[in-house]
Image (cartoon, rainbow, N blue to C red):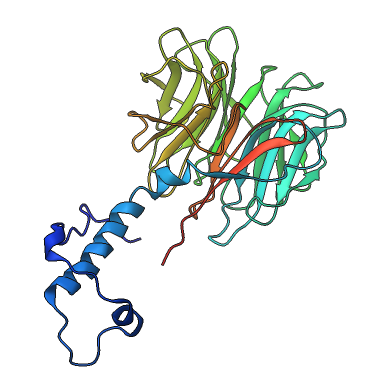
Length: 340
């Protein structure tokens, strides 16, 4: 994998040392054996430097521009979504949401999040989280079902779903996979701590302890050995815990006492967390390149709907989803700048 350079290719930042070539020169380029003036060569290299500087901030620009898509045919909230990770060219997304009277609301897209179709599943229970293992399995988790435990279902293709058992009857809010064999699901406070369960196959689940009796809303893995779980505000800040193995968890401080609903990261090390509107304010969207220092954003395409889900397809596109308007759930996709 190519290594990102430490510095931008800065060149001729003094405007007096550059001269823009004419339109004709740009059309035909330099003629064979012609020696172009240094100022014109400086202009070309300086323009290249400016574009590198501009695109260095593409990840942050990408999360500030979203284009709304049709989210199925029902006015149901989408609570989480994930992109299939089986190959670089994979296009399949799965989104899960509230119980709709017949079963949990599950949507499947096979074209990078543009067109969505509803899928059936075993029970009429709300699903709060979904992830893919990078090989051949989706797992979704949710509220307590009629069997007395949290609703967990799995699928190889996002279309046919089977139910799985787990230790306790406490809601699970999120699930994630480390692409190396470990599933982690997090949820409601159970009276002692947050309900956290782990699995190596998506079927058999074991409970794990953690520092506080506070709800956890989201969990994610950074691809380099660190798990992140985020949740409710405890009066000072949001409950954020980290782990290197999914079993031993340590609490971390964070800058704002505001509930976080979802968290995800891209291939460039950028973390994106989303949450509530905050009483009429735009949806809460923050980013970080280390999981510790966070920057708040006011995305231009996100209105007064709380965001419950965020994911990145590892190809440059972010997708966020949340509360419905009068017609359908809010689903937004980031605008990807063209790559030369």
